[in-house]
Length: 413
Image 1 (cartoon, helix red, strand yellow):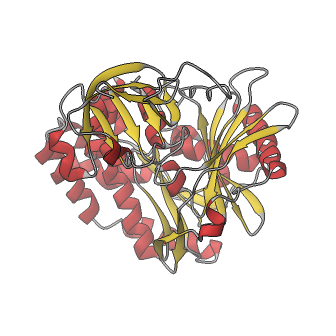
Image 2: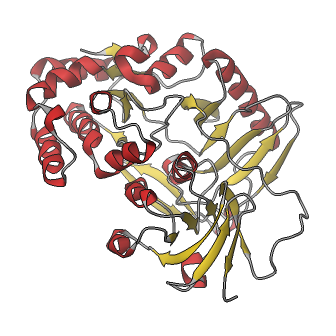
């Protein structure tokens, strides 16, 4: 019921685990771990008859509660304990690896649960069940519906990856080139990766050309996520470090080299999550690039309306609509079809809003974040990283966003 990560294959352990297993076998720097495969999930929940759930909220809530409250079978718990012991019983990361996740057609970026700094067999067991239950979360259901991939039999199968937790000094995301003469795109910030992929910080952005030369845009990185014991804490970045580059040019070039090796091993452009801990670079995830980000505007580009606010181009397209200020879940009910979301950042739990919104503007976040990926997959224009956007636009104002140029303009400006 437990598969060493180095032996993981996509057909039994999901695409995420399968890719990591392939990279380990190729000698790439992936944290060691193991996988609770599809078979364990099916054995644990098979008698719940999940295929009968038609997506009604009450049914889905009941199914999630049933999954999370049901203890793992003793054989699985014993196997988890032995596998954790073989790792030395360190803090671990527990991450989803669903059958329909990290595919070439849909990333499901951020739609299922992952947990960092988990310690001990009891906590790991709880996290495994929570990953399984997240198959039926509102955001996962909404993502599948919006993607037009509502194949219930595929959606309801999940493996779970358990790996050593890394206390990263710097983390980030990298997109390898989609074609010749294109650059590797890298985003980086201080601390653990959820700040970058979750869009709660605006990361530094790097472009590394084929010859190894690079350009960079250094952001104001105000917060970082770190482990404290078995908890994750958000800390303020010291003022003097906020505008310091998270990585130097040599590290960016090294990451690009690693990215090219991963892309060659996995057979196509890759969306890669990475971390640097104790001076060593690690690969945390690699999946096919499903959507290509807009290129950054040329330096000194003209034609931007004088009244426009400029951020990072996140997702192609231009749209005019009603601005809707959304600061958190309490504002969700105020969003109407066709509204343009203006928000601090978009947590994955906000995915249902992307089914009805016509565009997205955020105060923080990078073009490689989960929210930007999902916006591109759903063909929703997005502009990221406009400071104080929620206070600079009026709720109900008519605005126009250009996701390729990275501009937002109020009609009455």
